[in-house]
Length: 605
Image (cartoon, rainbow, N blue to C red; front, side, top):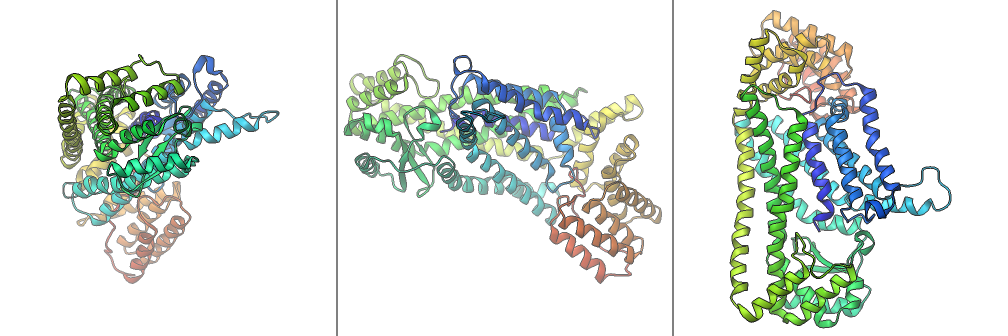
């Protein structure tokens, strides 16, 4: 059940890199970005017009050549054009703009992929209804995966908002920033994913009552509870088989193809059910999840380490090279690592079916699966073993080597421990990068040496300077953050976000001198004149309050609240924050030093 989402996992990795490391700095050509945004859709639609003879199946769950080509076109556009930078820049003033940019980029691939599968007729006409229905059906398949991604982004953004409100150094927050959100996300995904699959794929009970009864009896005989039997979605997959989804009792489903059920005898049906029940009995789905999540975390740490290593030696590795490395590592893991794990889990499930009902019914059942789906018996399979290989192994276990299954069980136990170890190492590695000042120090070393050699920063240094300012602010190093924002302002003196961030730093310093307060107020006024956003007006309100101008402070705070309620540049703060700010400025009217907020005033920090 994982394979339909393989291309989307690759796309999500690329989108994450694109949102984190957008190229082009602050200046992005809107026209070029817009054209690049439309290009993959046009190319996907053209791919969809090419016949199956040349580009393969249109089934939404099959990974055909047309879908790989759509992914390649999308990846090329994301990495070689200003599309990702344009989306990220456009959303910079929104609440949680980076997360919103990631979601939009992934949804963009969703439409590209669906157009390549089933392009609707743009001009209508005879036969135009069926392709439109096919396009909507293609959109349905990855919807559960996308919903879980949005859920994950929501958890991450809420966590970040809570951490900003709590204050304190990053080192004291990593447990809450990584471990707790991860555990909460796993819990939500375990319940939500099966339900989403059932709803989005329109799964229904089996029509054959006898088949339903036989499968349910066999599940009970295998000691598996809390599983509902539904029909496999043959219209979406294009093949007839069986599979299990879900890891929490009550939210688990066994999907069994109607076509396959009609072709099997009762003994064969029980044997196939025993195989699927083994996946639940041995909790294979838990370990799949742990392995994939751990691998993705390690790959993200890997690209970050490569990027930092390059900076340490004075080389800024381009985004496209990092993207190629990370995507290659992900595909290698999915093809080799996940495939290796899957083959061992499938073989353990085969062994369980052998012990339950013997070799003959299972052998004849998988032979019928091969016949129904046009799979040659001798053909190898990278994630299941080939039909012939599976039968040969079971024959050996039954006749020549009775201890073979016990040895395989021990091997699988070690693999499960390895999955958990990979997940633990991935979480610890992420924690190590975030909780220590390593990344900031490497970046500082690179930029300081570059500035020393150049004498002054250049436009190409903007992304690095922005990252340094963000890191310094989040670590509450106001001195360094101010220095970096001044360097950025020397390159882009009219950038309202930079003016705003520097103004906030100047006016909220506990020991701010009159000159700093005056400069901060001037910067806040310039920023508010250039851009009417809630977070900028909030900074202006703080600057007026610090300058002992409470009337103007309340006026600016009221304007900030109005803009926030209209959804214009709220930043990473809630509406409650803006309401409380207006109330607090009213209570301390006439005070010279009201307390400033601790939140970042732009997506940069």
